[in-house]
Length: 244
Ligand SMILES: [Fe+2]
Image (cartoon, rainbow, N blue to C red; front, side, top):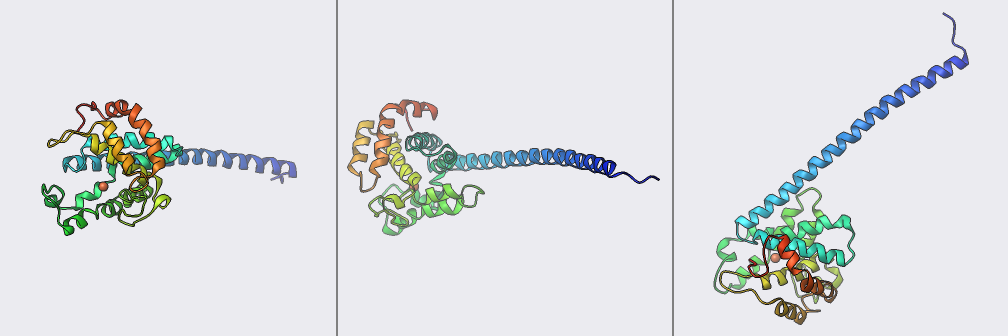
């Protein structure tokens, strides 16, 4: 059998390399597709978990689904106004939806007690941001949202809970949730009371500017509350007059 010349050997080696290259690029293309498929499945699964937890809040009558949906709408609008990058908005949306999930850990007898709370009962309710954190941090990929939920009852003057953080030490998303949660609760109708007019709710927010609420967040939020409320309520499937 004649020996291959160097030129023949080179050509043979080149064609083998090209063959391996083709095989590998074929394999890596299908690997990339498979990874993409698994990523999509993971995201869909995580989204359905988020929706299921939101539904659970609704069933437990902790936050009605429409209140949570409105909070997500308000939060996204304020976050965009504060120039938050688009890739962080998913965490913002989830934190706004599920920040009170920890209330599941507070007995109904305390959570729905009609009369005044004892200091012990108040202390137990005030643990709910920590409970929210302990639940959300278990969702793969929601660690950031869990921190936002942990700090949603902090006040910018340091008198909030659980950590007594001040000013910019409080994550911006937590400061946003604090403002929009207070506003949405004030303007919502309850079976036992009529919601406040938006102008009155804004006046009350402003009275706590620099103590409970971040003035910069208020500055971003107030024009949105004044101009976009009808869109936010419509997006959540309610009208402003019938808001729950
Ligand atoms: Fe809360």
